Image (cartoon, rainbow, N blue to C red; front, side, top):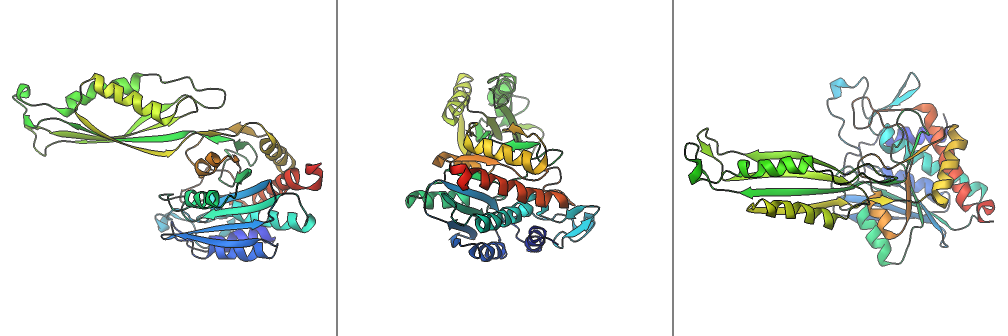
Length: 380
């Protein structure tokens, strides 16, 4: 059994459901210290974060990821214990296999191997690992980046181990993500008898044409890297509890997934203009989960692409698909960010798994990325 697979299994046995790290980061830190990393635990609330660094010079290359996993769900639907990794038919099964303990193990072992073969590498190598990615994501990577900014530590290149691939390892590298903006809207009306609508103000009736218009409007065509902006309502609540009474208010929550065509301020103003045009009486609160980011096809992207081809033999697509990731906290600090990890088809599902052979190919990809950026040959 190779060290990467063994470390993956060891991490998977830890029941690190958000925000509990359950000792995963301590295991990783012990291994990194063997390779000369200085390891620091940053705790915010009930969230554990690891910042490990080897070297003080620029450029700083950072591996980033998370030890927390989502709950296992109905255990009787799993073919094996979700927290006791099991290999069947060439796959490693268990919670966190693909998202993202295989990536973490592969990153760690790649860094150990690289620093052994190239102890005087250029620049520095770091790890930013949190236990708060699957949850609120407020005391994890975001707080660590704030801490690093405050003391003048700047990440130049970051590779996140999120499961990026669709059908085979190597088919996708993410070079950006769409922004996510949510609105929480309450439309105020006046309760009344259904037989006398002229004496009431039904917020459902008021909001219906606004909702139709929001769905009908084409906001943009996207651009070279991003698909068109999407709008979706995820919740609507109204009603008085009686069939003959119109309600006094309506609550709805909606979300925009948007590209670099927009800023969140522009989207907010667009919605508010529409609400005002329909003369709604409303209260609207906004939550920005993350702004869109895009890493240009520069040195990091080229190194990652070449590493994927070298390790997997697959030509990767450069994509900005998927939801959000912790890259939304790292990119605004000025870092170039890419994401590469296993096939994502089983993540968050019962019987989550990763191909056993892919685990070592991940290590090879991460190792080749380090060689492409920080070796003496790369520097020259």
